[in-house]
Structures are given as C-alpha cells and as structure tokens.
Length: 244
Length: 159
Image (cartoon, rainbow over all chains, first blue to last red; front, side, top):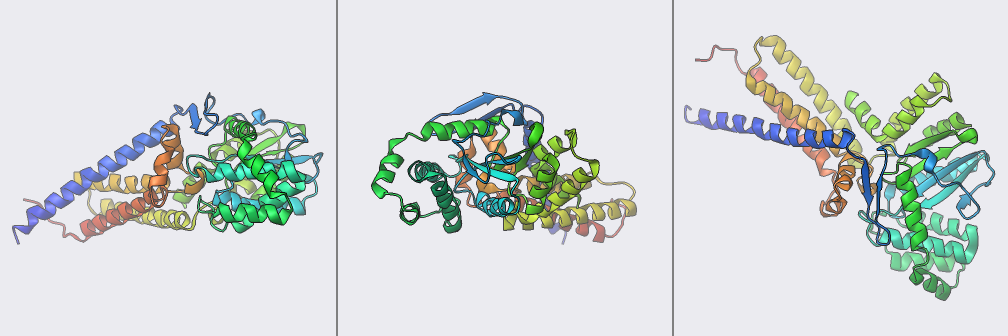
C-alpha cells in the first residue's frame, strides 16, 4: 500500500502543472488575440494577397455601395439591403442562404446582395472555383441565372466544406440553367473574374469580415449593423426592423 | 449559462458592440435582439460545437459548485487545489476555443491562426479545430474527478 502512494502523488502532482501549462498557453494566446494587437488581418487569396492595417472591428461604412453590377435578389431600391459576403463551400453559408431566401420572400422592403468571400485557406480551390462559376453564370445568363446557380449550388452541395463534387455539380447546374457549356468553360478558364472576387474579399475584410457568412444590414439614413455567421431568422428580422 | 453567454458574446461581439453603441433603436429592441442571439446555438454552431458548449457549461458549473463546497468544508485550500482550479479554467478556455464554425473561420481558434498566418493548419486537424472543444470537456471532466476525489478524502491532519 505504501508503495502506491508516491505514484498517486506523482500523478496528481504532474497533472496540475500540465493543466497549468495548457491553460497558460491557451490564456496567453487568448490575451494576444483580444488585447488589441490583432490590427493586421491576412486573407490569402491566390490572386491578390490582402494585408491591411485596420481597426480590429473593421469599418462597416467601408462597404462598397450597392449598384446594378451587384447580384441582387429583390428590389435594388428597397430601403433595407443585406449585403452578404459568402463562401460556396461554407456549410453555414448554406444555412443562412435558406434563411435569407425566406427573409427576402417575406419582406418586400428588403433586398439581398450577394458578394464573394471564398476562404482559400479553409476551402482551397473549390471555394474560388464555385465563386468564378457563379460569376460566369451571371455573365452568360444574367442576374436570374446567378441566383439559380447559387440556390442550386447550396441546395445540392449537401455538406460543402470542400467536399462538393464540383465536376458533377457545376456542369449539371449550368445545363439546368440553360447556359452554353462551351461559353461557360471559356469564361471559367479565362481568369477574368479573379480580380472582381479578390475585390469582394478585400471589401469583406475591410468591413470587419473574419469568416463566412459575413453580412451587413444597411438601412435608410446610413443605419448599419453587422451580422456574423448563420443567425436565426428571428434575429435577422429584428435587425431589419432596427435599421428601418 | 455563463459560459453560453460568453460563447454567444464572442461569436457576436461585432454585432453587439455596434448594436449597443448605435444611436437608433430602443433599449428594449436591443435587449430583445441580444436575447434572441441565444437561439443561434441552433443555427450558428456545428452539432459537435453546440454539444461541447452545453457540456462545457454544465461541467464548468459543476466544477465551481464542487470547488465552493470543498473550500467551505476545508478552511485552508491546499496548493494542489489551485492547480485543480486552473485545470478547470483551462478546460473552459479550451472549450471556448473549440466553438464556432470551424469550416468558415468564425471561431476563435481559426481567427487566431489566421492572425498568425497559419490558417492552413486547420486543414490538418480532422475536426478542423473543434478538437479544442473536446479537450475542454476532457479537462473539465478530469477537474471534476479530482475535486470529487478530494471531497471524498477523509479530513485528517497530515503528518
């Protein structure tokens, strides 16, 4: 019995320092993160690396004004606009996509603006490819084709998270929308939307976006509120009411 | 509930800070919206993250209750108990690291990795960083185990 006691003590004694080290390391990192030193955000994109000095919270007023070149669901002159920065491979973007479809359907005074925010570090290649494909759908089929592609992609990509079988899904969606496959391939391989997508990413980061989905609800008289993640419909509708 | 509040607060700090500093909207509207954000545990969390958050809340509450019970029973808290407390705190912090949308970079750990330009590390983790939530749960279970063991020890004068 006496020989077991030291072993038990060693175990208990070791457990505590180990816990302290783990806790200390985690707390230190948390302090670094929250202590105001996070003034530099780097979002790696294949085309344009964005590295900007800015306030940790971002600047909501830096959101690029909505214009006719945007992908808009609803009336462009609606008093409330939800500008969403989204990643086709993010499962939570898929979730909020359904919610926003319902919100726009229920609220004619709300317009939904879709902008690109592919997270290359988390969803390499596929997020960017889907973003380019959606832009090509818009170029070749107009705004309706963009939304058909977007709704279809989120509906049929099942899990997202960079596991989508794009070689099957994208051609199927393009065929369903009625876009010429050859013209689509030319567009997708041209690289002409890379800068546009990079500009969207840059604007998302500038406004405070640190992940997807990142949305900004803009009301009349410049009232704006950010929306981080896939919020419930009730919260989104309350925000809409607040900014009106 | 406290842990859940911290988690929801971290996830929505941009909205909450903008909301409560905004000159528009009534306080009542702001309060209702703030409370509505609790519903986001069903929409803004993965199943695993939601599970670990709730379990972390329960386990941390249990740890605090056990610690209070023990300190009330034994007047002088041995040094080892401080370690147990830190272990519990480490569990809570670790739990906080594992929350959010791992796949979308909205949780604390992935944001930190991005901060240090190491976001790619997430792709190496099978659960994309949600391992930290599980680590938090394990640490808190261990903390509670140590606390229960301490409480069950007979009160004697050590030689």
